[in-house]
Length: 367
Length: 235
Image 1 (cartoon, rainbow over the protein chains, first blue to last red):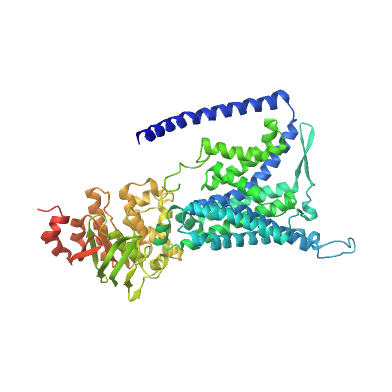
Image 2 (tube, rainbow over the protein chains, first blue to last red):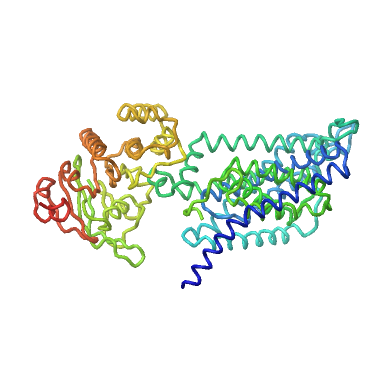
């Protein structure tokens, strides 16, 4: 008995001492490395840095939308919904099929006999693609909770977590069976052609700001503002916050807790669906695996911002997108290693500040 | 109005309520008193629908509530002010009051009710934009009661309203409870502070380890020798 308690004491002392030390060593190494690559080697000119930053910002907007879903669900159920990336993937397929369908409907004119509905009504097509993606993802979120998680409402949290991982795999394989494993090229309407954009001069060199990128970023920002207003100003938002704080007391106010949980999954799914259609439009490739990495990275973003905290998820998403885009260049490593950067950040956050940037200290109740 | 018959409630293997009976007529203040763990809060939570009885029934205005979910019981006019206030700490005072009016839909009525809550509790008006978690214990208790009244209850269940408050505040809270009752709300009061509870109660029940061991009018119980010895510090 005495022996174990001694060991415990030494462990506590060690981690108390080790944590700042590791933090210090890693950050000083990283800072030195960045200084060396950026200022001594000067491998990249300013216009390239701007290009990295822009692509990071766009990607970050999408991560943020997905990360909000993780954080909303965690805030209410204290579970990590690992199938959330797959919800985004299903939304992406919704948008993809709408574009395919509209590109199939001929609307010939004298000037252009090959014109299709996609390009004769591009704005309507885009809107309908989002409607389809958001609806499918919202419904996926709803049924995911209803079928997989609701029967486990009183089960220990670990069981929910394993179920979520299982649901993720199941949805991925379902999509592979339905749509095939090949990557599909998304056909955008001409007004959102992927190679088109505004050219801006940065230190004498042109940098392309793509229409699809600006479109995604602006839409992400609008959706985040909309979500914030829903959570802060509406009755639904208030009941969501009440359920997140105390389910029993919320029920004593007349809130239907199950209904609020359902709606939370629907809202999370809808945001992920919107991110999925943006992924279609900006990235242009979709298959059953599309949601997996963005899903896990958005989870990383949510943890980085402080899980359960909505502004934290937004900040974490943008920050992770930027770090991932700028990181490999700044550290002078291969660009293929950008995923490693994201997950290294996850590990570092968990070691150095488990509660995240904006997160409060985790209370016993939430752990 | 409220009738509880042969109520049995379990927490897993623990038999928390072992067949209790009590009733409350419209306009009454009824108190449940007893020591920690006697089953007072369990009784309230079963009436509110947070716990399900294994046996027996809860009847309100002739309707059996055993299978009605908590959020629907609220709509039937039974509101609980839970033990430990349970204020939404990360919401403002104003938002807490709006949560209390969750079942209401008429905006004008809600605003009017918030106004009357503020005139009953001026302290809350001063702090309306402050987060609930930053209020003092007494202010939180006032907010909890004000929040409960927002739903226009016919029956108000109060769980330990005096817990952790100074004697002066306790007296203030009990005055408010009496005032609410005089305006037509029936009250079921759970208290460890038996002295105060019996003083305002029309009738009271004494609980001991999940059973009702005694009942009577508040005044009679205040003078009962065994109650005095067990709960009033015995003289």
